[in-house]
Amino acid sequence: MATAATTSRAPVILQVLPSLGGGGVERGTVEMTAAIAAAGWTALVVSSGGQMVRDVERAGGTHITLPVQSKNPLVMRRNVSRLEEVITAHGVDLVHARSRAPAWSALSAARRTGVRFVTTVHAPYGFGLPFKRLYNSVMTRGERVIATSEFIRDYVTKNYKVDPANIRVIHRGVNIDIFDPARVSAERVIQLATKWRVPDGVPTVMLPARVSRWKGHSVLLEALARLKDRPLRCLMVGDDQGRTGYRREIESQVEKLGLQGTVHIVGDCRDMAAAYKLADVVVSASTQPEAFGRVVAEAQAMGKPVIAPNHGAAPEIILPGVTGWLVPPGDPAALAVALAAALDLDTPARETLAHSAMTRVRQNFTTARMCAATLDVYRELLQGAPAATGVRE
Image (cartoon, rainbow, N blue to C red; front, side):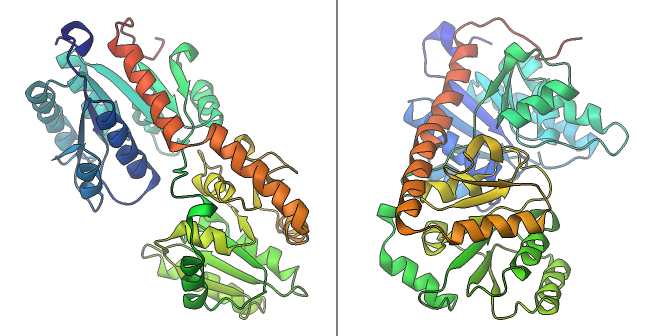
């Protein structure tokens, strides 16, 4: 297939992912769709569908529905020819795969049609089951492999025979047009405070995370139990996504620790910028390493003190003592000490931290920066870079 570099037409980019629900991978796909369209290129997205299809279309992209969410080997094999048809019919120049099952089909389709192939590693995939390492390896077979953090880059180079020259670290980005305290009105904050019954003048600690065991709700509760003498309110913001059993465990722990008047599980929130502005301290308590940790960056963009575990990508985002605190993962005592320090900040210290945090995010972790760097990866391949498998034999 002739590429855009040889025909001088605008490139056609195809992103492939399982579905368009509401997660970080999906948001990144929509953000890249907008950037591709803004560059004057053609943006295609293949997925099995979902609530964010409309977001892709509003961003200037075209969505094509295929059963690429399936891990059934027969369906995955049929998806190869389906993707070949899409590539040929739309004159695709580059395929960007964002998840393992669709990546296997996309890799074969790209090789058969001669188009460029890029992958993004969004997580440190586990190796528990037989053949899992081989299954995961497709995400390292791009001609360029995008790692969402230095932590993910190190995971890839440690576990797979990838030429480091083919890896590009591109941190996930924060939309600073949304996460900007100057753009969040007092009315929006008051509306949330009223809905969540947050009393005036009471310091508010926030854990923004879906209700999942590894997000560390239990660790935060144990830390709060050590601060019972302090008047404060803790808001656990996030959807349980049907995990009602685990939510009941959290509620039981709240009662056992005597935190009923302190902790409130408020569920999903559609206005996270206002939620961050309402908080005095934002906590990430994940017991497993985060591949990036968008919450940490979003909260800093809003000028909030952030406490996060000292693993995964959090050390790349937080400057300890300058923009927040890093604590040992799964350590309630250390988290309690950091919470006390954050809550005790006086006004000048809080303003200094806010300025440093916002500046760091704006310089390093914006959506615009992420999109520009990804477009550069596309250009690198489309402008005649030698083809590569991304894997050393």
